[in-house]
Amino acid sequence: MSNPPLADLSPATFLADYWQKRPLLIRNAVERFDWLPDLAELITLAGRDEVESRLVEQRQGRWRCENGPFKPARFKRLADSDWTVLIQNVNHHIPFAAELLHRFNFIPQVRLDDLMISYAPAGGGVGPHFDSYDVFLLQVGGRKRWRISSQDDLELVEDAPLKILKRFQSEQEWVLEHGDMLYLPPRFAHDGVALEPGMTWSIGFRAPSTQELATQFLDFLRDRINLDGRYADPDLRPTAEPARLPEDFLGRVSAMLAQITWDEALVREFAGCYFSEPKPHVFYDSPDDLPDEDEFAAELSERGIVLDLKSVMLFDDERVYLNGEVLDSEAEALPVLRQLANERHLPPADYPEAVIEVLYQAFDDGYLQWPAD
Image (tube, rainbow, N blue to C red; front, side, top):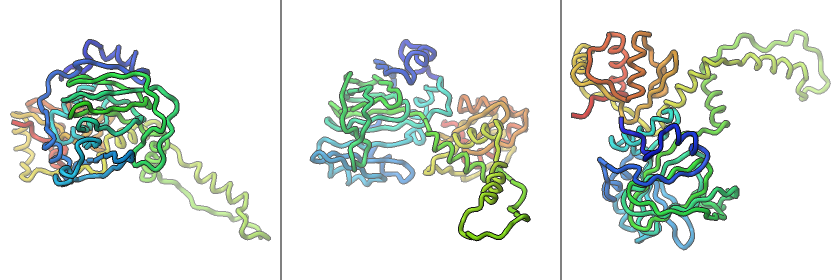
């Protein structure tokens, strides 16, 4: 695995001194790129149905935002400046983007979100804004001026299609060149404007709100609770106000709902399933020619296997989670499955039957792939 792109900083120092505390500029954070797309290749990506993309324009002081997929002809109608195309989850489609994203594995994978690419000509940007999560902004090609601020005033421009800050007050400023990277904690205001045509590769992290987690957890509970009893009131008496909610009725309902409980084990299962759940636009393709299990085992021993770029695999002390599911596996298989989750690949080897059984089903689901030749 490649070293974290932190220059001379150790992960421990970065987390202790900067993570969610203060910005950090890292010069020459990434020196080698095995994939350097041009605008034509990005336009092709933005035209695919399974790829999330947006096009942001600023016209006469007003912002516009369109969602893809886009036809190539759309880009021929753009001005020479004041636009940006953004492509989400590039790590789902490009192996080098996935490899770069996972260089940040010194942070738990449950927090990793995606690698987004934004391309802008000179003058392009998406306006001053803030993110509710940590982000690393890696400059790839060209130069870009970033202005940042720790301001508390986060009021937004009304009726804008983007979250544009109404009153941005720059406190620090840098020009990033190819390979430079800027880390920003959550809610740190920033504004990037391209000085030359180029890209920003944004490595973002998941930071769900309490409301989001609570809503999803209650939905998760719905399929896992089995409450006994039914409403009953054998001591009911006549009422003179039939539309009033009786106090004894409310007490009984409250007691019925108080049966809804959960423990740490259920929270662990929820976290593993929810944080490995594929995004709504993600789909997996089963192999066209599925080998039988013996053929699969023979191929595995010769080639090893890798997680699909879109797959998310997590584990705790008792379970392994893959793409929103708890893997049904024997204890004997757990060490190998944890290795696959951590490293995203397994080397060629003769694995136990308990491992092969789990991997074969995941391969059939499209969650695993053979390594590229």
